[in-house]
Length: 61
Image 1 (cartoon, rainbow, N blue to C red):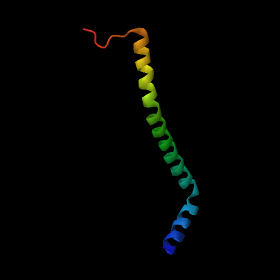
Image 2: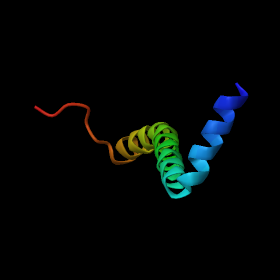
Image 3: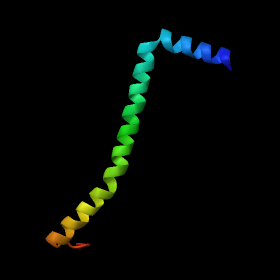
Image 4: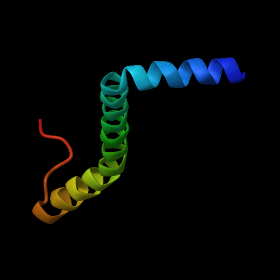
């Protein structure tokens, strides 16, 4: 395991820009997904409140 760790560290340190870019992309993706999962219930509640306030019908024929 020590040889693998040493090889991994050597690879990361020789390509530090690539490592930072990949880490940033992963962090942005995680943040985006966390934001979307957090906003969905709030958006549904807001939409329901709007429909109730303005008396929007459930179905229009």
